Image 1: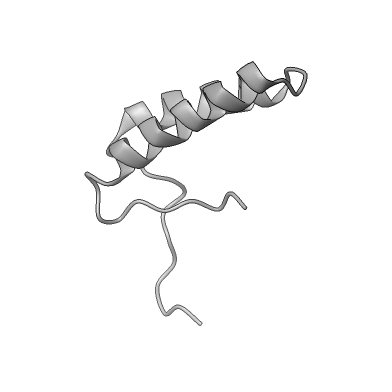
Image 2 (image 1 turned 135 degrees about the horizontal axis):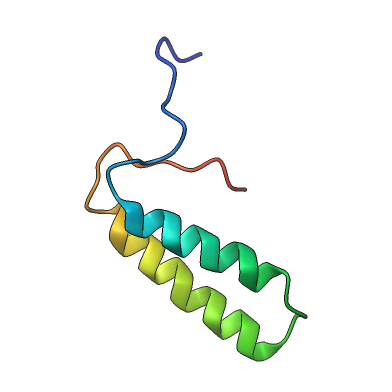
Length: 61
């Protein structure tokens, strides 16, 4: 059990919030190959932005 609470998100990189918003909008679209390809691109962008911040974390499953 962690002894420290985590902050609600990763505030030091607003780009992550932008990518998260794009992912949320994308998930509202019908499942297609194009959506899957776009999702992969967004995950790469998210990973790239997050890798610059050692304290970055997510609650997404």
